[in-house]
Length: 147
Image (cartoon, rainbow, N blue to C red; front, side, top):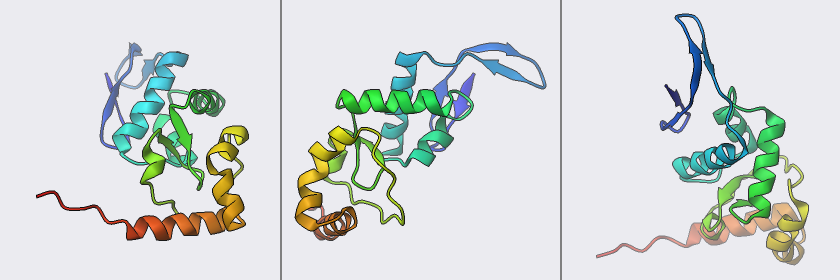
């Protein structure tokens, strides 16, 4: 069986029981969950919000397990918590144009967040000002056409 996802891709899941009314699948273990998170972000091609990640993996894993898996990936420097609270793969932070959000939730791994974004936030005075600065500078950087 394949599980459809928001991004249009599908993931293999192990079916334990299936009849015409119900399908029971095995929940992923911690390693499989980490791979699912990475693949979900990779398939989207952009950083995802917590809400998008939760929606994408709902039914397979609970919110607490998902949070623990994302924290582990952030600590391993596989996933980067962006300045606007979205989650992307390492390297996406270099070209990502932050979303303008009304409310910024606290970082999942504050120590990593401060190391990555602290100097920019201090230089600009606030997270909102830093987001605005990144939006403006990255919007000006247009991709060059390859001949």
